[in-house]
Length: 390
Image (cartoon, rainbow, N blue to C red; front, side, top):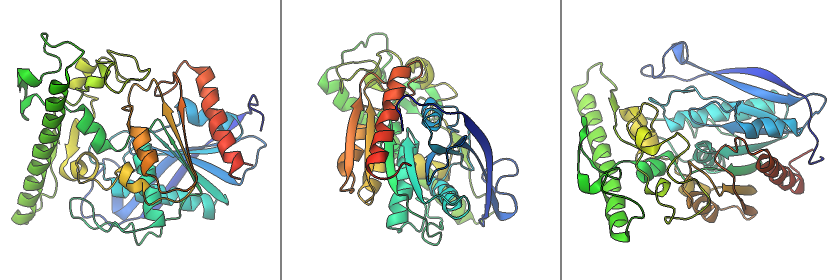
């Protein structure tokens, strides 16, 4: 397939549904009603280009059809599915084990209904740990319960494994990301203005570069805050269960979750990322803004996606995958911490694994058409070499 070739793409709305029993409703609206899960996605089908292979992009909560990379791959002639989970655009109640089942429904539909012979999972950003979790359970199913102790149907689902795996601009897990970003200066979880000035990254008297002693104390305090928050979640969930009433779940707010020293200090894990900003804007504004990660959550969602108890830990899951793997790190990524892609790549159990660094690429490659084309070339060439592209 020519590196310069582009084709007309026909987008198709995709709707899947499957039965799943639930003790209470997690998401607003029709989704999940009457024991049926409804999923929506967009399949990009290049006009006049049949294919035996489907690329599946899926994020736990985002919809990826508007991102540059999936569309660019489709314009190169690949069949692409941008799959949405039941928690599309709202991760406040998200259970990673349920998203694995959602992804499994798409993979099965791709092979058994659409007739694709091969599926390549593309784990972009937060989709990386999701896809790794899925593939590990498709190859070696073992997860029977969520971190909250609720039974899940992953083993019974008989997930179909993908035939290839691409990890691009992806972090280790949502839990690891939160541990890297959470503000350890918070003294009262119910009052974001009560802070320890000695741990306040945005205190006017604290400027980068930060000395090693401060960073060590800061990182330890971040982990301690995560531990305290997780202990509180477990305690509240246990209280609800012991009461035995009709209250099954509870929502809560976690303030100040964007205090990542790497975004302010170029000396830390140096790469080409912009300093003083992040993919969501000014870090200090994001720190307590409404779109910060883990801002709104339920007890079970916290345990499943944001806590150290998560099953969706890319580094651990990668050890159980055997299919060919391509890992692409974006050297100017303004979202994913620099070491994360390498950590997953090093842990991967695949004998056939390749890693490359896309120099100068930001997280989304927005306004970087040359780098976007390079990324497409990398994926296309890698797939062709392994018989994963027509």
